Length: 378
Image 1 (cartoon, rainbow, N blue to C red):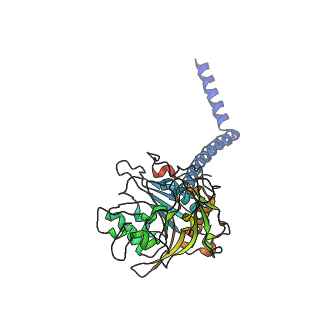
Image 2 (image 1 turned 135 degrees about the vertical axis):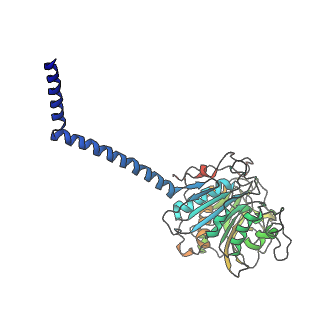
Image 3 (image 1 turned 120 degrees about the vertical axis):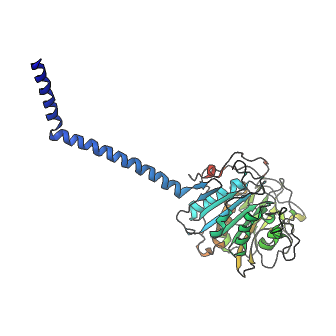
């Protein structure tokens, strides 16, 4: 028994001697450093993923925020408001925001019509667009809404922005962006306003025209964009060839001439069909052609003059046309005073997969939330 105990103690001493040898101490230290380095790699990977998310796309429950990368628009804040129930702005404006942020450096916040019951995007919800307080610090507003009847506390942010004299871009149904029925506070903004000095509401007063009618046949006659005579060198049209704009939506009617403050850039040639190679519609529809894109200037009640760009194009499937995307990007530069930095041919490549619904499709993707639209991989 004594001999057995001595052998046990001898083995223990031998093991201790081996484990405390310089070679084994170096092995032990190496393993500890591997553990520490592994920990730091894990922390570093987490931080990198967080920064990547922050640089590409962030969202709270009611909005999509895309921080600008490098480009002339770096430091400029753009708020895009998607709120129509026909032209799928809930798909189109996030794509435009991604192009502006990723390709040109603008920081973009996209707001939506949100169902107050479940927090999902609902184009048919006309009384709730949360997040409009983002307009307080915005440098540019891009608007595609249709017949919204916002409560006073939300509408006030829009009105305060407009009256500040900051720039505005209105797409498609922005001519009839608002239909104020439930309050008289801002009823002058309603598309059918009869208030003195505000006849035609926001559309006529700010953009230059309100809703009049479909000039071409809706869903049957598409549009070819023709540069207005003498506007070939306009910076907003830089890199755009006459006729290169083709969109499936039809030409809207406007009253001619537009107000004296408006300057026509693009005319709409109605085509006899829904394909880009269709022939022009014969007869008076194209005699004369209607303006489909123009600039305007609006002098606010504060005495400040705002730059305004308006187009009656802009549905989600219209944005599949490269030349139209370039027009909207160029207009964004111009609106914020960066017209000298408009590229010779602005990069307007689509970001990520983009297969929007046709404006002929009256359904929308139910259950979507702003954070579901944050992907910017390309």
